[in-house]
Image (cartoon, rainbow, N blue to C red; front, side):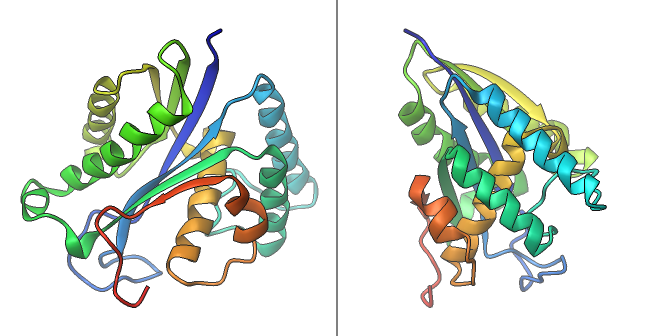
Length: 225
């Protein structure tokens, strides 16, 4: 019997190679990568309603989440509630981080979107085959990326990779604030990256690690990691 599976994908980092990383923006991030949250359940509609209720409850308490949940910006209280619900829903998490210092010369030479496409390909080619069977319906929901100038090219790169995967894929490119699943993917990716980089994240062990299936670093890691 075929299943309907939802795989939500968010990215981390920027496409720059030069300049030191700056938490406030600018400079080259250490990694560029993707994280996915996969919901393989007949009750995924309930997951969405629970996310809606949590978002609305924050407004009831005077905290506006007009653009939804975003781990890097949310308060500790909001993170606590969000991670608690993620733990309850227990989607499968998968992550792929490309250490940009080890990028192949041809990837750099082909321009920034080659890095984006490469990261997406290395991630999806493995994960899509692991989370679905050939007769399943696999909905791949990817967060919009970049400025208006490169958004179309990024979407085309995502679509081209999906076409190479031997699965029944329906691609959706949505804004993060429009999708509960994308916000879950953002939270999972944020927690895994903090763990990867040796930064404190009290939510990783209890809420994300139990359903984290892969943490891939195909281009290696800095020597001090």
